[in-house]
Image (cartoon, rainbow, N blue to C red; front, side, top):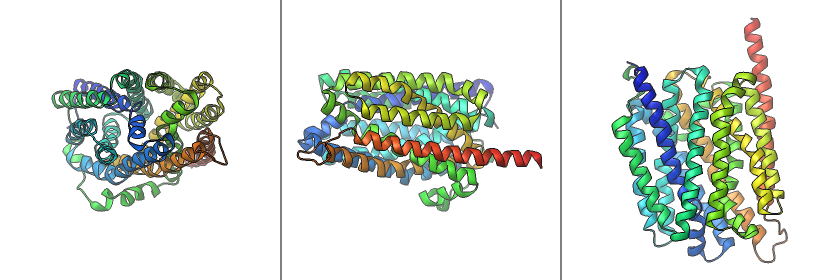
Length: 414
């Protein structure tokens, strides 16, 4: 039996609030985690590649666990998976708050990668309760929730980081714990028993789950776009905090403030612009425009000579937010209701492969450009390369969209 209209509204509200709380918890630690790594490592250059390794560990665990969690949610329902994840994140932030060395921080990133894999279930939940034509807007709302979390999180993290580098982790633990308690009382199940699938390791392993992405030509192309999009995006998590400190002499407060500005713009784009843009231009055109705009914005960031110009570059870069929900929406329209969890797990696995390779790559590039005696002393090089990758995603998205439009036209003519 499907959930009632009132319970559906409560469910949407929960997903929105939980996404905000979870992303606030993640955003709180962003301004301080690289600095804590630098404190343990002893130098900015070493912190660059170590931070890349930590992000890669997180992404690798997402790669392994996302399809498992997605398939488990297809079998047992979305509610238990989401609740267990929020409880696990709370415990993980406590672990990192107490970490005495880099090894403990690494363990914390591994646990975080496992528990945050439930984002696949959040997207599957929204697919359960939203008709296909409304999913781009629904995913835009989730993106807006994430952005709202990134407004509050980095601001809080920047403020708390000035007090103590450990304080943001304790507050993050409290936020995730609050999300668990809220969901325990509010969240209804979205997947009726008659629509559940038996658990299968063939679908649950990362490579088995990704076989679904080969079921349709457009799905394959969109999976490649997803990979490139996430590969480029990790330039921020890999090097931004260290880059801002090195080039502009920014501290936790300045970093947190800029990240909050990014969150505000993303919230506007994904919460207010995605829906009307898709209605006017369609999913495919909106996706391609967002990718080209993002490439331009990242290139401007790498060229920015001062922190002021870097801050201005986030304006065109924010239009990148048009690409993420539209890509998701297009992919959900190519699979059945029974495969939504598997699809989101496969998507997260693709993103996680990018998340393993990208931070290692950009972290190494940044470390190489800032070391003493480097033959290429251009710390903005990582941003230039990210812009090239995203431009490639835009070109690929354009090709995929053209082929899909022609195929749809041929189907209608037949």
